[in-house]
Each structure stands twice: as C-alpha cells, then as structure tokens.
Length: 322
Image 1: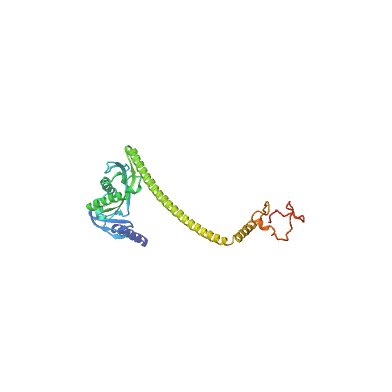
Image 2: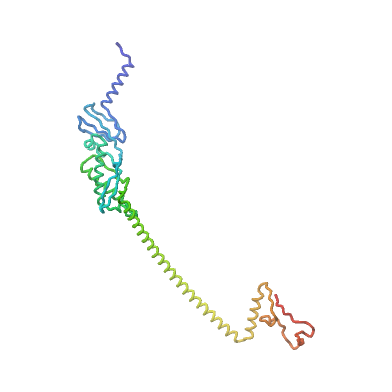
C-alpha cells in the first residue's frame, strides 16, 4: 500500500520533533541548567540557548532560576537579647541568588524551599550573635546619629556569607535588612522614658549653645557700640575745638572794630528774618535788628514835638517790612 507524500512528511516531522525532545534541551535567559547522568552532576549550563543531551533516563535536566530571590523571616517576631540586657523584637528581609549551580544542586536537590530554610537558619544565628554585641541605642534612640542599622545589617550579612563559603552551599546572600523592629510590652514605657530623657538633654544642650552664642553676639554688639560712642565723642570734641578756635578768631577780628562787627551781625540777623515770605510784627523800630530801619539823624532833620509826632504831622511807622 502506497503512502502519500503528505503522510510521509508529517511522520518525518513527528520523528524529528520527538528526537529533538530526546536529545536537545533549552536554557532560557535568567536560568541555569544542571545535567545529571545516572543521578550524578556532570555539567552545568549558565548561558541561554539550545544544548544536546543524552535521552532520558540516562541524563536528566534540572533548570534553576538564577535571579535574585528574596523572602522574609518567619511571621513571628524573634526576641533578641542585647549586650546591655535589653530585649528587642526583630524581623529580617533576605535577598540571595545561586552562584554555583552544581554545588547548589548537590546541597539542595529538592530545590529552592530547602535552600531558603537553610538560609533562614544561617541568618537567624548570625542575627542573634551580632545583635548580642550591640546596645539598645544602636536600634532605638532619640538621636538618629546613634542608631547603627546599616552597620548591624552589614555585620550580619558578612557573618552569614562566611558561613555559606565555609560549607560551599553554591549560593550567595546579597542583602540582609531589618524589616521590622519592635519592643516588648514590658519595656516600652521604660524606653519612652529614656527617649524623653535623651531628648530633653538634647534640648538643654541646644539651649545652652544658643545662650552662649547670644552672649557672644551681645558682648560684641556692646563692644562695637562703645567703640562707636568713643569715636563719636572724640569727633565731637574735635569739631567743638575747631568751632571754639574759629569763634576766638572771630572775636579777635570783631574786637578790632566792635561797631562794625555789631552792624554786620544785625545785617545777618535781618537777612535771616526776612529770607522767606513771612510777616513779622514788632512793637517799634528800636527792636534789634529793626533799628537799622530808623532814619539817620542829620542836623537838617526835622524835629518832633513831645508826642513823638513830626512837625509836619507825619508819624513814624511801627510795622516791620515783609
């Protein structure tokens, strides 16, 4: 019985696909493959792509995720006793990845869950040991500079890394961080009292520093004010001395001709009085400096009667000029 070409082609394709499934396997990106032959690891593949294999059950292929895995500590917070006999409750957050697939598969043939359980035990032991070397203020303090979260986390990480290298688990811890920190109910009030005391001490230190700074500024201001007053007094004395010298010189000149000096002073006063548009009323023209306005008496001047009225009937004016 003759078979059609289509049937032959389909059969060939099926045989080819079946053969590929038996002799070829695929490694995807972010994966690693562990190849075992009769249960023993013979090689690992870390680069993505297709690879040849012997058919099952001679060789088996196990693929593992090489990306960074992360998981939290147990749901229950763990009590940790510190160096100063205080107790805190800690929960950690762990990140890790497979570094050596062959060693990892040899230690954890059942996969990632067993590896995470082992990691959790290692990190817990490191946490208890490292935290026991620190005091309460490294975890809880009113002063942020006294807290040492990062330092404690790094010390736990390094101790856990050392344990992994010693036992060659084929994996590496990338980070260990505190996700949650709490205090037992029995010590909460004592902690709050201590934090309040520390904060009050910080406030007192700030107040003392501010008062000292204020005293320094006030003292400097007083010194500057005293210097300014001293300079001003010295300058005033200098000006007063110059004025007195000028006054003495003026008196010396005036004494040479007192009448001329008096006349000049009256003219200066008269000029100051009538420099602006102002009206002045004086009782008579004999008031200084209006006496300058009196007519100059000459032998030919007309005489007045006893009432101060000129013989021609005219009365002298008593109103000041504008």
